[in-house]
Amino acid sequence: MKRLPIPDDVTGEEIDKDVRQELQSLPKGLAEDVSRNLVMVARLIDEDPEGAYAYSKIALRLASRVAAVREAAGFAAYASQKYSEALAEFRAARRMTGSVELWPVMADCERGLGRPEKALDMAGAPEVQKLDKASQVEMRLVAAGARRDMGQLDAAIVTLQSPELASNSVQPWTARLRYAYADALLAAGREGEAREWFAKAVESDKDGSTDASDRLAELDGVEFVDVLVEDEDEDETEPEAKSEPEIESESTDEFDDEDDDEVEIDDEEDDEEDEADAEEETPRAAQVPVDGDDDVEDDEDEEDDAPQS
Image (cartoon, rainbow, N blue to C red; front, side, top):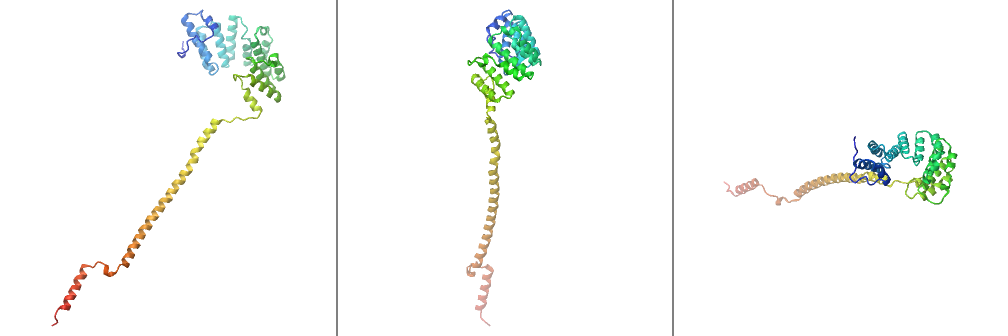
């Protein structure tokens, strides 16, 4: 059997004591192995349903006769929207324990399989009377969902109207019940009432189990801006803005180089003109005599001095 990696910090002791008690019927090493896989199911079921499902299949192969294992496998399949498989596991767990606490989620599996009528039949079954208050509210939510699946919006609204909805006390189910009622009202076009109940859902939703605050803001016309996206856009545009001065500086340098060349040329021309002017202005007496000219003058002087015959 192929096993999946389990972190070393998972000991198996993290599971509920009632589940540990069920696993005592197994050999010690096997019970520890099963319990560690069940811990991984509980860790991953919200964030990674498919991963939780994979661990549940291993636990199921190791201990398929343990009701807690069948129940865990059912919830993992339910979270992965494998409703037929989930329903089969829930039924098996119910047969083993005789408990009706899984009745609401079994009915919701019927909805997932496209059988809302069957879910409504289960909502009216005697088993519902055996449920505790939390499970009865859950059953009411499933029944209202089945009504909406069938296009019966008004009936869904009436189904949710109950003492639990009208109560001012906040219970674990209060936020979800108020949210479902607000959503049904909005679907029926009763926007004003929907806004009121979304606001009440926000008040009771202390752990953020619903998106009631977002729905309320949407009704109020509040638009949320993703600051991270804006910062990324600004970062992308900054290099383009900086490129313009660089281009200007390059062009300026080119013009500066041309000016320097022109200045150098002008300086050379000025030097040549200055030299020419200097030659013209210098007195001929100050010019350096050529050696040949001195010899000619000496010869002439000698001829003048010579005696005439």
